[in-house]
Length: 415
Image (cartoon, rainbow, N blue to C red; front, side, top):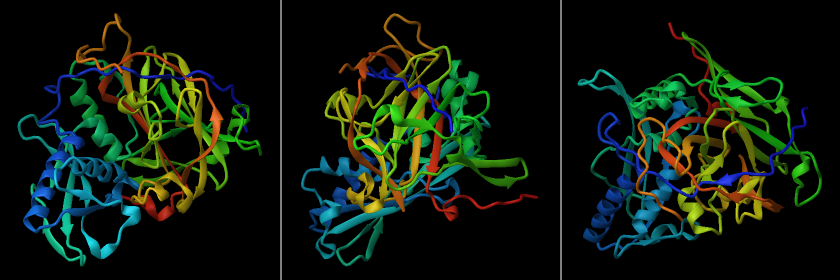
C-alpha cells in the first residue's frame, strides 16, 4: 500500500468555448438535441391518444461495452419532456404502474465506413418504444433509430477509454479523435501502474486517474486518511487475435469512502468531467453555473482530488460505497445499468489571452449490486478558476467497481 500526498487544490471550469463542427465527419448530432426531437414526437403521440402522463424508463445498453451509461439518455429525455406543453412526466419513484403510459428502449454502438471519405465513423443508435398503461407496446417512435454522433456524448455512452495523443493538437482533431474513440470501443484496453494503481489509456498517456480509499474509521472521513492501494486495481482481460485487451476493475467494498485523483502530466491545462454511476460529480452542487459547465480544471503538470459530489467549494458529499437501495442512483429510481462505473473525460483547457489549441476558436463565452451514495460531508477548499474548454474530448478513462464478471465481455479467441 502506498500513501500519497493529497492535493488540496482543485479548480472549477467556468467558461465554455464554441468549436466548429465542420471538422466532424458527417452531421454532429448531440444527445440533448436528439432527445428534444424525440420528446416532441412522444408528446404528439400522447396527445393523439388523449394521454398527458408519461414515465421515462431505462434504455438498455449494448452487451459489448461492459455495462453502459443509459442514464444520460433517460435523463436528457426526461428533461426534454418536462418542457413539452401538456405533458406530465411522472416521478418514477412514485409510479402507479396502471396510471400512465411509458417510454423505454435500448441503444447500440455502430461502426461504419463513410463511402465518401473511406473513414470509419461511430454512432450511437437509440431505439425508443412507447407502451400504454397496460404495458402493451403501442409503437416504435420515428425516426428509428435515432443517431447520436457527438464525440463527447459517444465517449460517455460507450464508457470508452482512449487517449487521442498528438491528434488532440491537430486541425483535424475531431475526425482523428473519432477514429481513436472508434478503435477503443472495438478493441478496449487499459494500462494500470502496478506500484501505484494509476489507471490510464496507455503507458505513455499523460492523463490518468487513481482511486484513493479512506483508511480511517471516522465519519465524516478525513482527507489525510485517503491512500492509494494498487492491490485493489486489476485488469479484467479478454483475448482477441490482436492480443490481450481489457477493462480496469477496482475492488471497492460496502461502507468504504473513496476519492478520485485526476492526473495531468501534460504541458497544458485540462478540464475533466467526472461521472460516478452515470451521475455527474456536480449532480448535487448548490452553484447553478457549475452544474452547467460540469468541469474540474487540473493545471498542467499537476494532480487534484475529487473527494465527493460537489455541494459548495467548502464541502462535498463524500463518495461512499453502499448497497444499491441506499445509493444516489438507487434512490433516484433510475436505471442502475451505470452503477459501478467511474469515468473521467478529459478536454483541453486554456486561459484568456493564451493561444487556443489547433482547431479551436475562442468565442461564445458563457460565464457564469454496489454503487456510490452521497456520504458524510467532507471539508474541501476548492477554488474557482476560469478557463475556456474544448468540446471535443482528448482522453477518457473508465474503471468498473464491483461489476459482476458476466457483465464484462467474455474471453474470446478470434481466428
